[in-house]
Image (cartoon, rainbow, N blue to C red; front, side):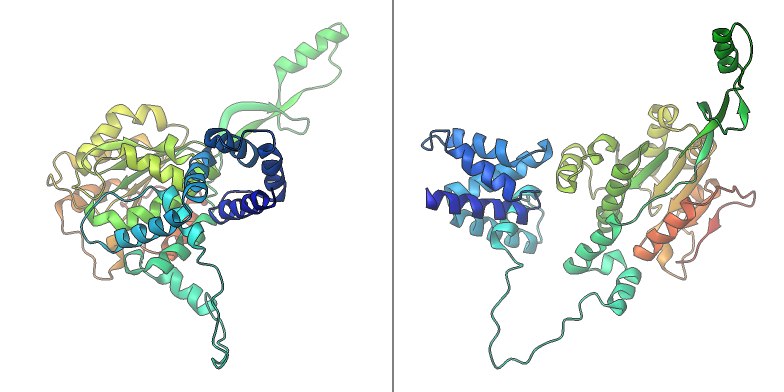
Length: 396
């Protein structure tokens, strides 16, 4: 029994390293649950541990991966970590292990374990992520980032908030200090007093943030940017309501419901299953036309703001793109085009797709680093002002 308690304790530590909220209470409950089952049955043991240590449905897949590695073959985790490392080094496109498997393998390997230092080695001052490193990370292009910089950028992105400016709706809410006289409630209250008006009921207009609609290009030329921006969209979708995200390459895919999963690994795994055209070609005109035909009346309303994330390189030569962009522009309150090509100081709209889209947007902004994302957050928190002279281009 002493060995079993020790194993349960180590298993709880593994789950914590994999990102699950497992503490001492769950470890004690798991040890107690194992005393009421037949330990010879692997199914009963897994059910007992899962019931005692997991409280959310989205954590079940990570738990099952950890259980299979820890209680079946301790060396299987090292093999999974080695396979994940070899998979990352391959240049050919092959099937990657599920994200939850990589998380459990990394937790099994425990890279945070301190390494012993030689006694004669002089102490080295740790200066990771100092002020200079933070400034460099803010200005570094997503496409030039390594694995460590991408991980740090994802952590910074999850801290961003998107305070869209609130708008007044037609709905009213009772408020004793409101500026609107509510005649219906006043007369209804007077009936209880024999028709005599004792007090005047007041109300105020309800304010609400407008819907946010995102059309993100996931073609080959946008591959690295789309992967990082998807973390930003996941954070926004979990931070506020009425967020609609569409991915397009050669077809349009609605991933709004999948990005609402709290665990980003689970959300991105579900997105990968329903998006078949990742890093493929680009048909911007066809994607915008499909959105106008199938989704615009459902999601564009009450002052909706649209973010169009693409480099404007259309494989179809901008066929029908200008007409569909004009309809999209007239259907929303604000249309902002985010283009990573604006990071170049000498950028000129030479391609047919860019020239067709540019007259139909309110703002033309870069999106290639953390600083550009922070600038976007600041812009969206200000009231929208449409310009009669065309889109306003923001420097990179």
